[in-house]
Structure formats: C-alpha cells, structure tokens
Image (cartoon, rainbow, N blue to C red; front, side, top):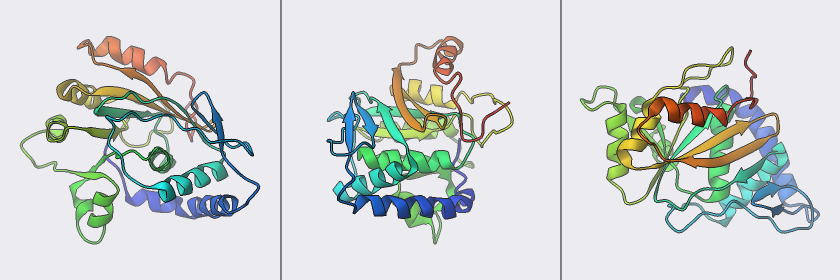
Length: 242
C-alpha cells in the first residue's frame, strides 16, 4: 500500500523511450487529440476530450503539464475512460497492482486530468535529497512509529482539508504470481473520512486507465468488497497472474 519509490528507477529507461516518442509526436503538426463519450483517443484532426472534473475536486498543474502527459500517453498507446464524481473528498483505489508501471501511468493520468492527488510513502523517503520531490509530487509521509495507525493517520489527512484526493493500491506490494488478498485499510479510510471510493482499473490488455465506478461504504465490508472486486475480474495487469 506504500510506494516503493526506489524500484521505479529500474523502469526509467523504458519510460524515457516513451517520453521521447511523445515529445516528437507533440511537435508534429499532423498529430492531434480527439475524444468522444469521455474517452481519451489518439485519432487525428479532432478535438481531445478528457473525463470531466467538477469544481469540488482540487486541481494542480497547467496546460504544459497536461499537454506533455497526454503526449506521453499517446506515445504509449494508452487512453483514459470513465468519470470522476464531483466530490471534495475521494479515495482512488487502483488494481491490479503487478508492476511499478502502475505508478507511472497513474501519475500520467493525474497530470492529464490536472487533479491534485496524493499518495502515501515511507517517511524515510522524505529526507534529503528526495524530500522536496516527494512532497511536490503529492507524497504524504507515513510514520510507522506514530501512536495512530495507518488508517487513523490518513483519516486525519482528510479531516485536515476541505478537499482531498488520496490514491491507494490495496494489494500493497506488487503481486505477480497470483491474486493477493486486498488490505482492508482503504475501506476504513473512506468510511472514517466520508470519502467516495473511485475505482482505478489498470487494464494493460486494452491499454486503458479506467476511472470508476464510484462506491460509498455501506458498513458491510465483505459485501462491498465483493462488489468492488467484481469490476476488476478478468482485467489484465502488466504481469498477468496465474
């Protein structure tokens, strides 16, 4: 559930290849963006349309960060579909989590949408020299030695703000071989903070980042979890599980 930042460095060579192609396509006068039904597409000579963000959702970034992220996703052949509810407090729940590429495509999606989204990382990563970068990118340090547990710390983060969006991968560390059990913390955070749960589906088979549907915790964890997980059934992660 906590970001393993150092492992992402092993993915950088491939990422720079995609960035290079994206920049080249961005400056090409023959390429453009289009969309229909709130779907990101990469066809030519049409207008790009992104999933709409309501006024309640915190924003960050500018047209340059949005355009750059869209160019990189285009180069990778990916699209964004779905919708995000106009709610001030949202918990994004991403799965299946099988690769560090999940983090990268999540961040690209964040920049494309222009949303101010936060993630959790080990407190040790917020020291020099990475501390400034981690905070700038939306990181929240997790203090494992604090008297309050993970759920309580995250609920406090929600309660300290009028609007807040937090991204979590409930499968925790990358699980490639077989499906792993979801940790229940995400559910209790949403319930304690009164936040909407928005699913983020990493569909590598279709090269699609799917946002939604949205769930509100009913208090019946087992029933809600079965319903939530049903939307991930048959979805292919970066490393398909047996």
